Image (cartoon, rainbow, N blue to C red; front, side, top):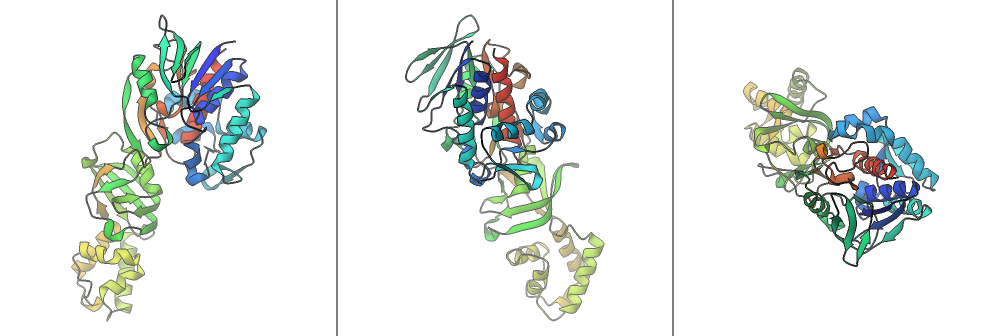
Length: 406
């Protein structure tokens, strides 16, 4: 039996503590907040999309950074095992669109409570309101945990402190400090799954939601992203499901080199859309253009589209020239935007970057530099798209670490 200290009581920490204690170890979990799983409470808009019920190979296709590293952990403890574990401790589960798994109650707190029940079932000692200050070593091996309240001898320390996203939940980068002290490289951290600020003033159509549009991002001639879905205009630029997914792909790219384009009518190719325009112009020949385009667009976007097409909103449909119609068609199919920056960590769902995966054993999550030191969850340089994938990464890596300590 070994003495194991788990630092952080979030998704990866609770799983690591449970898995380590189940191996017969004496486990103490330290959480600096007043309660466990503070970040879990706000995931999935308070409903907690805790995993994605898909096969491991499909799961790994949704990992943006660290897929190869995570392969063994995800196959060893896949989403279905996570769901079964929670069920075994009394949580009722439902699976919704896109294989997204939620607690049937729609209460994120029920996921945390279930994980806490699991930990207590194997006698994990939980210390709330106790911040870990440092991890002491002896001859390149973990020896003690030093907190605000005392020193705790241990044979292993599992760092599960999260990243930098939503700092109000306690994710303030503590784990990077521990990692640097142990000689680890930290891949620069950036917000991910977050809105994108644009050069264009989108405040004038703030709140407009676009459904069934195609958002495309190009870097020169290379297409980085092109998907159909939903997005939203905000006071700073754009957000919504499509934008969050795109943000995960550009966290490490110079945004000034990227051009964004929205196809506002993807169901119609240019030829069919032109035919639709000709028909609308003919049927409403005496109406002003600002009224004609309302049949194609959300009302709040009509003036902007006409402005970009260099068409007067008051112009009569029967006076529109062929060249003007071509410009209108071009704007409808290629509504361009210029990204300036990603929004901050306070709005980001996850952190991209973290402890370099080259220095971590993918089978056990143990440091290759310090014996008995482990890193799990968001503190690692691994992140994925939305849909429950990031929480499952936390669970799979936490399980791998805890299970390996014997």
